[in-house]
Length: 370
Ligand code: ATP
Image (cartoon, rainbow, N blue to C red; front, side):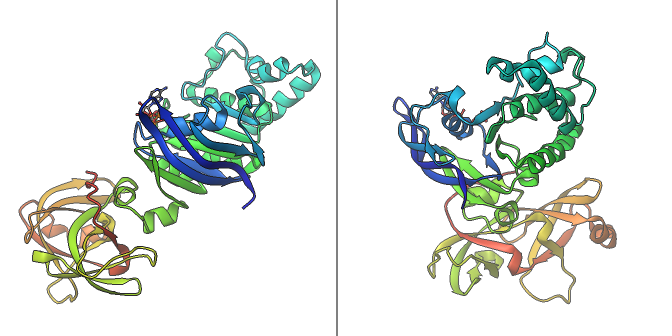
């Protein structure tokens, strides 16, 4: 991999507390890479080690093949966009974008050339003379991007930059950010606790929990083949059933579901499962299908407890009759329409699933995310 940013065995401790456990990772040039995880898992700490605001307790950060030990923030080929954007409110858009260039002694004509080009890139041509206070939230966001890009970083670090925007604008800006990243070819390193953001924009995502990277993969792989219970529960929604491994043949795993009877699931080749081992079977709500009387295969018998209309789909909260565990089921409008009569609290309904879409992992005790 043409590695642009490399974390080589980095550890970050604050006193006795280890915020980042030993971590090695390579991010390629031109990649849109996200760190995704809940509050406090260490995302900002990682970003700060890359930008130079923090010095790792152990290990080394490399950027563009150069070791960064001893290189201060302003000498690194990085720029950062913070959650609050940190624009200068009393300055014009031009002045904001050109600030970093002025500090570097770039002459006025060249500065204006750069800011005009960047305003075009972020689709805000003609607004250079406006004051920052005259801009909308989304426009401020784009100016912050233009300002960060003005100093021609190799790597742009983005610390939850969309979290202050309302939902509609946030979704719009995801597409914009991705488009800007593609156009410029700059490496974007993005941190967020919002899985929607991470999955829609990133080439690859590192899912983090408690100072540890749980899995690094492209969004589709994370969703289809989570490698830990934490990832299965944190990325998208999942039902989790406790099972025991009977045996496996390749990726196919036969399972003893206890009161639920025998079940089947899929496990990646690198997931180690011993016969008889306690395991968890993860089934996503959208992968459950209502079964008729004549349908064969594993059957999860449930009673509906609540029905939520969510526009394009129905979300059913059901309870498994055999085990008393909850099972959430998402039915697209077509399936829901066909089954409309029966979908009300108190009704009994059976579900089946394709074993290909149900993931088996060793039981690591991760709680299900509601
Ligand atoms: P959030 O999404 O809430 O910003 P985060 O994933 O970015 O969270 P960090 O800010 O990296 O998390 O913090 C990781 C852990 O390290 C937290 O437990 C935090 O309290 C601790 N921590 C961060 N900075 C310091 C510091 N300077 N001194 C002591 N502990 C710190």
